[in-house]
Structure formats: C-alpha cells, structure tokens
Image 1 (cartoon, rainbow, N blue to C red):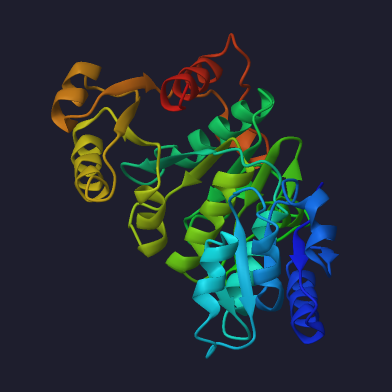
Image 2: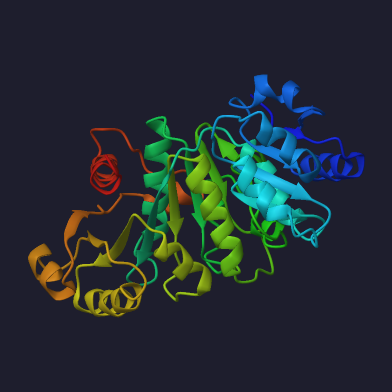
Length: 346
C-alpha cells in the first residue's frame, strides 16, 4: 500500500506530522525538496505540504490532484491561504489545533478501498416476535454468500446478539470498548477488534450493567461499517433511542417484523409510526397468525415482503447457541435470500 507523502524541511513541523501519523497507524514518505516528491505525487493517498516549501512546490507545477493539505505551525501567517491556492491544496491545517483533523486524514488515507456497505435495520413490532433471529439470519446468510457483513446489536436490554449466535464467550471488543472513543473509527481497526466468524463480524454488549449507546458512537461505527463492509445489519430496540434513530437515518432499508394477529398488528402499527419519523423505506415481514397477509398489509400500509416461518424446536435450537438452518431449500433461508436481493442495492 502506498503511504501518505509529506513535503517539508521544517524539522519541528515534520516531528509533529510523524507523531500524528503514528497515532493514526500510518507511516510516511518524506521529501525534503520538491523534486524528491515527484515520483510519489500521484501515488500517495494523501499529500501534506509544509508551508515552508509550498512556494517551491508550486513552482514545479505539479499536476492537480485530490487530497492535498497545507500544514503550518503559524496560524497567524497571513500568506498561508495564498500558498494553499498556489499549491492546489484543498485545506489548511494549523497545528496543534488541527491535530485531530490531520490524524483522521492520515487514518482515512490508510484505509483499503472503501466498500460502500448498505445498512439494513430490523425492528420487532412487539417483543419476542423474532426480529433478532431475523437480523442474525440475514447477517449469516449474507456472510455465507461471501459478503463482508457487520451485525450490530443496538438493543442494550436484548440479552446480547452474540449469545443468540452462541458466541458470547468469543474474544473481541464490545460496545463498552468503543463508546469511550471520540471521532472517526477506522474500518480496518474495527474489523480487527470485533469477534469475527468467517465474513461475519459482530458488535454486541458485555454481560451485566449496560448503558445506552451514544449517537456519536453509533455514527462512527456505521461510518466505519459503510467503508469496510458490504452489508451492515442493525438489530434495533422497539423503544427508539438516539443511537437507533441514527441507524434508521442511515438505513438503506428497514424490516418491521409483525405477528398476524390483532394485538400484534396494533403494536406493530405503533412501532411503525415512530420508525417512519426517521426513515422512509420500511417493509414488513409477517409471523403467521389468524389474520391474512393482505389484511396485515392493508392495516400497516407498508409492503409485506415475506413470512418469517415458525421453526419447530426453535427454543431448543437457540438454547444450544445454534440458529435455524439457512439452506436454499429451507423457508427461512429462502426468506433471507429474497430480502437481501430486494433490499440491497444492485
């Protein structure tokens, strides 16, 4: 992988840049004269030019490119913006005030090619309807199809989706390890930190005392998931907190799981009304009951895209830390394949 390029003779500025890059997990190529930067100019994912050499770089007329920054340790220098324009930089970063911005730029430069992952949210119309099971099965089905998938447990009181998968003892980060972080989360670091099983990574909660997820933490994780995964599945709580609304606002599609009986439809309608305040593409999956699918669809006013079948011995299967079979000939596997096909961008 090509490294960020720094062009400067200013030793103090270089020390600051090297230290900031190291904090972001990046190593640098350094040129002390503009001519030495020429072979790296088009290849570097990010170019940072010290204000001390900006005029000299501009004199070489380098080809225009994106992701060029001008770095300075003198925020009072009135000539800085002229140099920024002359060298074709997109922004000026003044140190030390701009250190966090620069750290994020270095970290972003070291990311692999972004994957632009879709975000699917799943929410239950009432408790126990099977939304977490469907979330897990969608994520597993996608990972079995070799889509790099992130399954996010957004329900602090749900008991842990890692336990549903039978991996509550798996080593790796949980929400409590991430909420203390501020700012951007590297998608590479996130993948390496989380429990992973093949192409599936899982973000759940620690056992014991749990706290709501701050909206900023959910935002950072979803942004990292968007960059580093093909699909992000979010298992939402029915009572929407700020983290849940953050996820809904970024959702490619949302699945509401409802039971086909009077109380189930009434409860799902209330959840739907609140959910619709934060996202637009909502579709229903129905658990079998006494009402016809057409009646449920008419009552909810959203498309019904499938049925979540009853699974014989489901409780015993889940208590063993297993999930129902998802093969192409099973009803649940067929449902997951159909939902992924319909909800994911082509």
